[in-house]
Image (cartoon, rainbow, N blue to C red; front, side, top):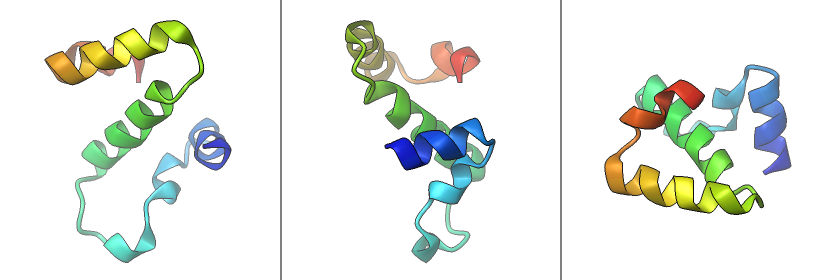
Length: 66
């Protein structure tokens, strides 16, 4: 998690993608999933509810925070 977080801070979060995937993914979707995973795995109590809401409603209302 610290590794991915450091990549995100450096603007290189896509470097966390498994190289075995090659180019068989949608860049925007991969970036969104990585960022959502980072936010949902934080040890902040309020993030848990936000992530449950995200999974219930889909990412669109929350895209502005990513």
